[in-house]
Image (cartoon, rainbow, N blue to C red; front, side):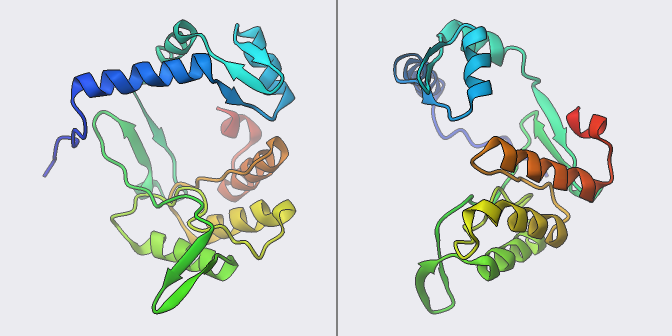
Amino acid sequence: MRFDPLRAVSEDELDAIHRASLRVLAETGIDFLDETALRQLADAGCDVDGNRVRFDPELVMSLVATAPSSFTLHAPNPARNLHIGDDVITYTSVASPPFVTGLGRDRRNGNREDYRNLLKMGQVLNSIHTVAGYPVEPMDLHPSVRHLHATHDMLTLSDKVPFVYSLSRQRNVDAIEMTRIARGVDQATISD
């Protein structure tokens, strides 16, 4: 049985949210920490002031127009590939809460054991199509290597689409490279 997507807001409300988001991008902007991204955004016509980037609404809309209306994210297990778009609804876990609780235990900082257990739970729940980011931050892992352990765990404990990320270019490159190796594909394939 197929259901239409839930409409949480009216078309007018959606348009108001859209216009407000364009205004925030134009007037407030976004802080970027990567020098390459700052140069590329300046070259594309954005207003770059230090780390703050402001986006012309017309530029934003011209870039949005280039995005595909749908695409597929490929999982290690092809049965778990995710089709995005075309009114397909996808459910993910929450990403990166710092705390965890449950089974009569008080709220506490997340750790690697919690992270691994939540990955396993996300793997077996059919209602969760993929685990988005870290289901809890494994705070017991030093930030300089957290992404390596977290990516390894995601790639070995789940056959769903991996959502890897971190807060620096090199750490993201590390996670993408680990994913490439785990998938057994060449650099050209992962670059596509």
